[in-house]
Length: 301
Image 1 (cartoon, rainbow, N blue to C red):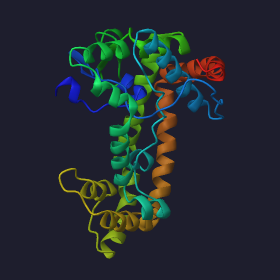
Image 2: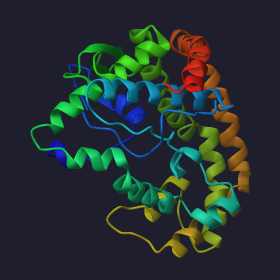
Image 3: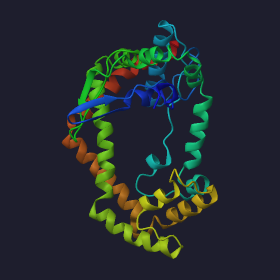
Image 4: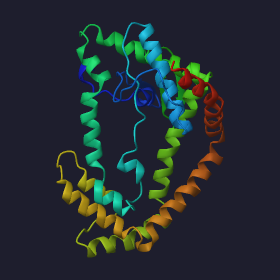
């Protein structure tokens, strides 16, 4: 896909969008995405993760402006339906409003088109757009690397404004890169462990019977979600809501929701024991960065 037609993502996601394989690596190089804001007069958020995010955004903005570009502070992305309910939709009120969350996804797409960073990127002359991308992400996906638990190696540039902001905030940039990439990978591993656990599969059976009785013969929540969210066959919102609402109503059948939450907690603890280094590093780096982040936000860097 031509670089100028890439859908722009948030800078936070952008920094994490690296893919690779065991015998080679690649990295995504796109520009910044949804969100807006100003650099001055910031109130320090009470949520530590929000403070860290905002501080990083302000540092990216400062860096980009030093390099002769404009940058608007990005909002922290809200979780979508799949990340909010990875095992089963079990909130009837949320399901009644959003179904599986495709309405929220479409709204994020519309916001992305209105985003000032994206509009700015689209307004750049074709010969300058790659320079902006390089200023943000660095010229090449090299300098930072991490080996994930599945053996895949991921890489990213240690140059560019994203790397510069993370280095200033977290100090040990290589450790930060490894810790974030490995723990992100562990999150996906945890979900897969729950979904394939015999206790989860056993609890799914009464859920499926409940769904069938309501006229929705889907064997698993994943298959119900997939049917309602196919990109090539968009469902009317009311139809999606009916299916998700039925799923939420059946979530208590066989204690599926309770079983999934219990397994999620147990596997989270197990993975922390199996991979103590990255999780401990991430906790430490965030803890040490928080006073710096609060100072950055307070002075509106």
